[in-house]
Figure 1 (cartoon, rainbow, N blue to C red):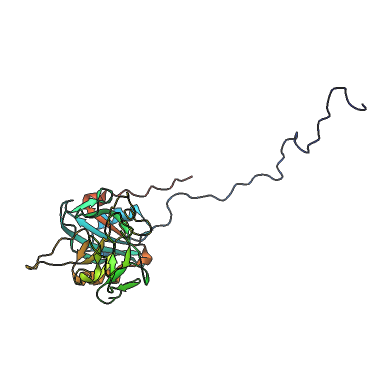
Figure 2: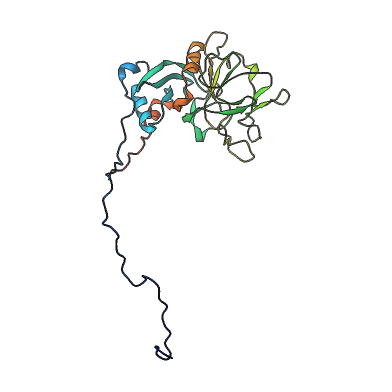
Length: 288
């Protein structure tokens, strides 16, 4: 065979496989990159926060900087059935107290951490919750009531006959709104029958749609029908604790509906002052 040694195969030629790589141009350094803290957030000015707990607000803001509104419910102890509610809101780049602390009623068995709570145990879920959203025949809502819309900053449903909020654990309706004039029974709430309490209401996002735990067999029913609503009173004009909701007087409730703004990503913070002050801050980004 011409040009070869007997018994040896000619190696196929592969372009560039046995040559060192050569850079086509010198490497250039990129622009400096800052991974540390971003621009300063809204100013926390104590003078504009009279009536709100500045220390608690600072801790909550550090835990979730994008939130522009906090609805803060504080109880003295986990067994207390009353506490206070206040709302702090970002306005023109500064935090302001838009609803000063007012007396609030909570569950007749106090406040219990959300994951330790069970439907029907008479406690208000403790923790941090977004606004709840529930599907209704008119579309998704957060605000509703037996009285006309007082000026809520989001879709409001005037309660109609048959409006039922499901609260029977481990049934398909648990944690969902339906129209039902015949089978709204057991723990379910026929909303039109609670005229005073549900004069107006705001859905607190504890175990709400789209992922409701407890609306199928075997799931844990943590919470259903947890609202901010109007305080009710006994025959002696003494405020009643709730079955798990948070309630405040009429005037303050109207102010709340006119203040709570879904565009600000509001969050409810519910617990003892000690618990809320222990809310972990969001970790700082690394710097390189």
